[in-house]
Image 1 (cartoon, rainbow, N blue to C red):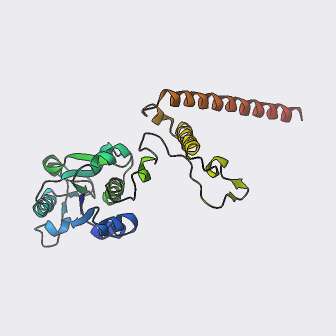
Image 2: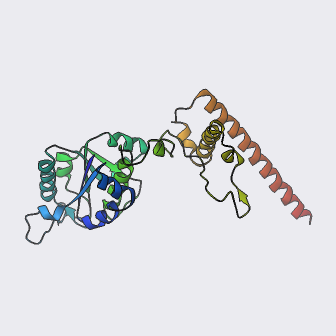
Length: 265
């Protein structure tokens, strides 16, 4: 996969892209990521790429022409038109499912905005979709571009050693991941679940799946409404809900009893 990032701050992106898994993946040829400095494509002698907004208002707006010239240069070098994404708080929220879908594409062009945004005409001309990494605003599109690049790249063949590395992770199958443990067996009086020491891979897989369901129920119950659950999974979730309701009821009764005792004193 080829990922091209158009930005005003390529050094900011390069510092992250050259490290860890993404850095190794590029060295091995599993993916290729290149940053393009939008300032290199302005005709302004001062390398200016922004101007005041028409209609008045605060801040500056990135001009269409330098971005378009940058996009043209990318298309010419790659000899193809990429799928173009503008990182914007106005876009659809990025998900694991979107990361998987984008990883199937051969070429992505990520446009990082700044200031008050980008001239709408460039969005109407080259952008295929706008993506947001959450309902909040950042100072620029570089961090969202890096988030998207990392999430997409690790789905590509050869980046991780095995597909199992991400197939059991949170959100890949619609659920949150099960708890993880490592050495030592006991730490600060807390012991890992005995099932993980049993050597019975079938029982371990069953435990992990049930814990995945429980984690999702406790932390992100909204995901269960969209997840593809088997009939047995739905029964397990119902049992977990009943257990939690009973526990909440007991806790409430204990709190009430403690309150009555305090009043008598």
